[in-house]
Length: 369
Image (cartoon, rainbow, N blue to C red):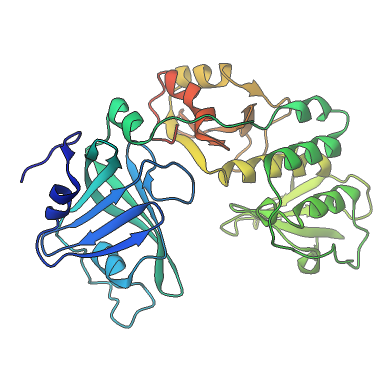
């Protein structure tokens, strides 16, 4: 039976797309049906970081744990399986995606398995590309827009230049909820610990993501002395360089140590650097994103005019042009590229906070609003 996006099917008709010998399994927010002809995934019209369903116009997420047969059909055997092979090919049978609404099951399109996440050999997360891309009308039908109760505000900005540690504390406590994880008390190191790092690690104790999801700040026991008493306390994500500080100063300069190059100083002292680090890592770890790797100058101007600039010199990662912009619930950064274009990345705590940026005419590569 040929089907097209936006077609309305009964539950029985949707199930028949799988063919004969159908085996079903339930996961958070979705039903997965494995049949001789196809895989059929029927999701509820929910929206959240940890529930299955339509994520944006191009992506569909499944959250598990998922039965082994589902993982094998979508991705082949997991990498830690004795049956896994570099030569394995994905199953050629289609994956049909639908959303269950009160009036019936709305057909979305074909799902192309993309990313997979495994825990102890069990598939617990899968991202599928929706083909063709959903129209805005269909997207709003199967993933109804929602509004948050509150969004993190920008009060911390007023303290940046005069009380950066207060700004850091307000930002972190407003943006990053505490978890049940505990990194432990701030262990004494053989060096004098500058107050900015003590404040930062106190904030990070129950917020492990604050110490880095892209780049990393080391726990004190992993600090190492380098270069005339300077202490290595952070690492670029690919090992390209380390960050250093002078333990003899209360708010020391931060230096970049890259093999084969002279030390380079960050524009902000440690207190400001830690706020910039927190901004970047929080943006990277945000559940909702918008991004474009080659944004033209006119689109950069449009984007930055819609946001509030963070009033400091650029951060030096990934190069000396990285600037931050914010709005309630939104952190964005732009970084100039060698070919004249600009990379733009936006992170948001709620999908609705991104929605205004979708109305600017910017050709986002990925957009979760």
